[in-house]
Length: 278
Image (tube, rainbow, N blue to C red):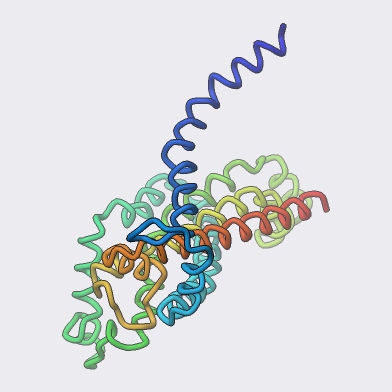
């Protein structure tokens, strides 16, 4: 009888969320999988033709290369910078105030952010006036680093807050005991606090990895649908295919992207579990 009540309670809390996820995510994605094997205009089954067209598309491989490079640069940069800022803020008495300051970029509208980047990085912008140069940052290979800077600037706040939440959850008794034993600030962090932040590290890494595939709005508002090739990401490709109603290619590419993301998350989870057991 007790188990039945537990299962009822479990179903009561889980079922509404599961129905919502199924209705708004799982079922639409199943329809995307179906569309990836059919022609957009006629709905006729075409097998793997859509996938072949995607893999033969040069714009697709350009977007994949840029997105992979963007993720490889931004992910470690965001994790390390966020951890460093959180380490410094954890020793401040007014950490709450600084958390609010770090979260301000996330509260700013994307249009406002895009206007700021135009004012700073355009050929006649503030940065060129300060340096006495005349460089079109958004029209050269430097546009990639502008995109990296904007992503880190906008997402650093929530990363710092997550790291701080993990740091604050570390029992103070362990750190105080280490200090009593003669451990300095560096040793306390390396041998006491960081090993207890593995769970937070996993969460932040997965969230940040997924967010790198969503850095589209600012780049789109600054440079349009076809920006300089170094900042042409998968988000631009999907947007352009959607505008051209090439839903068959877009569906096939979306399935491939979903598989890559799933494989990464599962592999990282397996490595995390192995590290926990070790």
